[in-house]
Length: 127
Image (cartoon, rainbow, N blue to C red):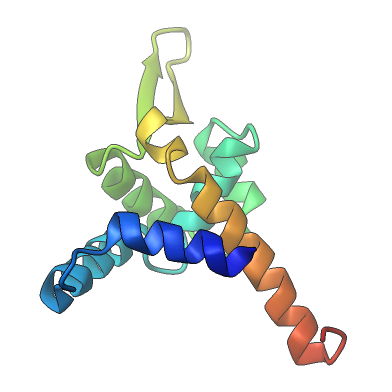
């Protein structure tokens, strides 16, 4: 069943004949936008309801303030998250995922599933 689904997706995504250069470029673009140690954990944090900088920072063990700030700026530039300034006293800033970011939610879920399976496999508890 899974193989049939993979074949169907491959037929939709890959050109015929295959274009290796185009495929590599698409992979590199994806890794550029989502790659690195922190982007996916930040997206996960925001999608779990953390909207303020400090809440996001506290939810991700090991991330520094400087790195979070840098990543949030890049992710805003890539239209993955939206930065909203709330004109209150004091002024506060909230981050939310965009519809564009949510478009790869299924991919993230598959990555989480694969990661859990991989960890079990390495521990010797999977088939």
